[in-house]
Length: 79
Image (cartoon, rainbow, N blue to C red; front, side, top):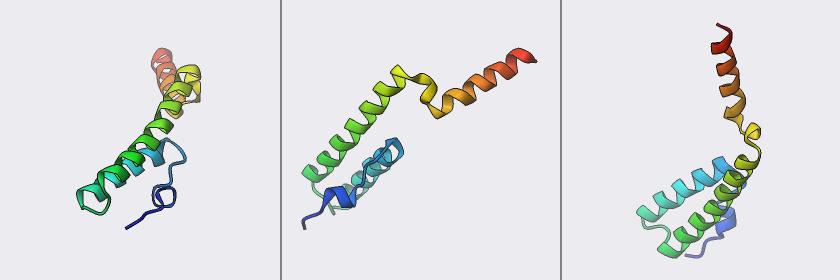
């Protein structure tokens, strides 16, 4: 069976990259995709995750959790 990997495994951002890695592993375990297809999905997801990690190092305040952590620290300090 030939799959359109871009259509079957849409990777647009960090959450979708993680989800598609999980999906590829599940389909591989079920015997639906082969090693090569799983590896391609894993590589595509890793590229997105590496890029996001590099951007987070450059711009830590862009991370969603940064503002909550900062707010929590400020709350502790003001108590």
